[in-house]
Image (cartoon, rainbow, N blue to C red; front, side):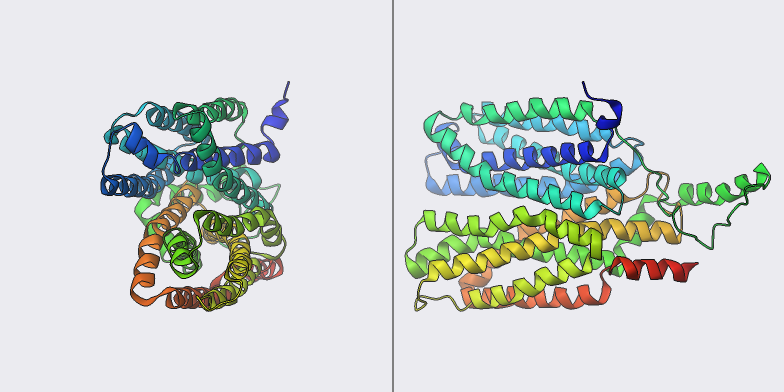
Length: 457
C-alpha cells in the first residue's frame, strides 16, 4: 500500500515523530486531572494532606525519570547504529506505564507507572529528535522541530480536557481507552517507518582544509589515506570527552541555559497563577484554565518559527521571542487588585508570552544540533561513527526537565516571600540576560554561516 520511498521519506519520518511526541505528551497529561481522584477512589487515601503529598511525589517522579532517562538514552542512542530500535522500544515502555495506571490500586504501582512514563518521554524526545535530525538534515530542521513543538502543545492542550471529561462521564478505566488506541496506531507507524540514516560527517558539502581533496584520477591508496584519520579520530573519541566538548561550547551552553530558564518560567505559572488570581481577584478555576489556554494556544504557531529558523538561522526568532517576552512579563507584574479588567489584560499578556515561547523553543533545539554539526565540520569523526546528536538532545531534555522541576518551586517561593510583581520582574530580567547572550553567541543567519564556511577554506 505504501511504497518504500514514502516510508523512508523525511515527511513520513517527521509525521511519525510528531505523532509520537503528541501521543506521549497526551498520555502524560491524560492522568493529571484524575490523579487526585485516583488516589482517593482507587488507592483509598482519605486525608487531603496525603493526597496532596502523593500527587506532588508522583509529578516529581516523572520529572526525575525524564532527566535521568534523557541522559541514559542520549548516550545509548549514539552507541546504536539504528535509532529506530530504541524508538520502537519506547512503545513497550509507554504501554506498560499506561497499563499500570489503568490497573493500579496502590501508590507504589502508580509511582512505577509515573516513572515509566518519564522514561518513555525521555526515549521519544531524545531518540525522536535525533532521528529527525538525521532524516531531515540541517536545511529543513527548523520547520520539522516546529511541527514537533506544535504536536507537543496540542497534546498539552487536549490531554487534561479528554482525561477530565472521560473520567467524569465514563469512569476511571475508560480514561485509558484512547491511550491504548493511540499506542496501537503508534505501533503501526513506527514499524512502517524505514530509517534513512545520513552520513555522520555532514561536512561533505563544505571544503575542510584538514581533509585533503583526492583527485578523481588518484590511486586508491590515497583514498585510504584520507579516510584513515577519520576512522581513527572516531574511535579515539570517548563519551566523556563528547559531553565535555558540548558543555564547554558557549553556543551549546547558551541554548541549554535558555531552555532551562524559559521552561522554568513557563512551569512556574503552574504553581503561582491560580493562587494569585484567586487571592487578588477571587477568580475561579475556569478563569485559570482560560489563562493557561491563552498561554498554550500560540505554541501552535511553532512551525512558523521553525520556518524562520531554516531561512534566517536560530538567532533571529529566538531574539524576537525574547523581545516579546520581556515587556509582557514586565507589564504582567503591574497587574494587581486595583487593575481594571485584570482578566482581559492577563489573557493578552499571557498570549504574548505564549507566542514568545513558540518563537524560541524550536530554534533553540535546532541550535543544539547545529553546534554538533559545526564541531563535526571542524574535526570530522570527533564524536564517533554515530555522531553526538543523541547526547546533545539528552542534555537538552535534561535541562528542560530540570526547568520543569525547579520552575514551580522557584516561582512559588518568590511569590510567597516577595510577591507577584517581584516574581515577574525577575522573570523579565532573566529573559533580558538570555537575550544579551543570544545576540552575542547564538548561530546567525544562513549568509553568516556561509561566510564562516568560506573563511574555513
